[in-house]
Length: 300
Figure 1 (cartoon, rainbow, N blue to C red):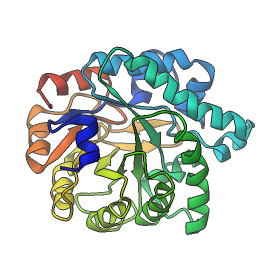
Figure 2 (figure 1 turned 135 degrees about the vertical axis):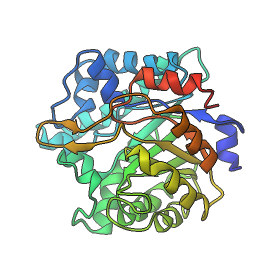
Figure 3 (figure 1 turned 180 degrees about the vertical axis):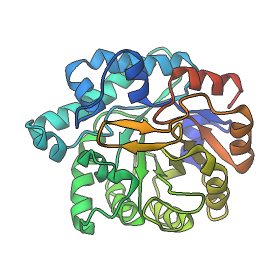
């Protein structure tokens, strides 16, 4: 077992939170803005804390901050300043921390992919046409700020291809004292969204000494078990999985087509655990009720 993981979570399975956007929608927020949950963070940070608190109350051991869509470049595209993006990154951690006060739940600072700021579904395709150095610069300035925010760990998530993973490894090297997981978006049972074998993606992710776990998130739940087994065949690190509710993201109207929008079947979760997943939660389309169902199954 990785010592960084043990320090944070011990040896038992861990319940991750669900889709922050989905829980915000349950509270009446409409997330059509290009800044997505970042807009709510700017205008109503208490709403972010309430959504996180719902997950904690449902049994989540980890809440993932609302920084997924926050970046200087994205904020400038929305007519905001780079400084406001930096402030929002810190605010996202503070909002999550308020929700975990008095509990043992951990705060993971979300580090979303470059494609997220394009708001066109690029995080499910990858291959942005950017150079390695451009990706390093984009992520480097974000992590430099997040590293000062006091999160317990970094959730590098929804990474669609190996190119971006390589850039993230270089950036993480500048922050060796902050443990991280790196989680990929997958196209099928064997490949990242950009088409590389998941084993290659894991091999790249584990080049960063601070990466204490690898995983799959915001991917079809039907693909999870085979992906976990492939990942486990090339690494001894813990594996985290937090798939979406199925379906495909429609960037035109900000919705999920053909989403099942319901709890994962208990038998499916059991298969994920048997495949070797140590951390289990949900992503888009999974609300606090889904996480409560996972916790009630004793995913821990």
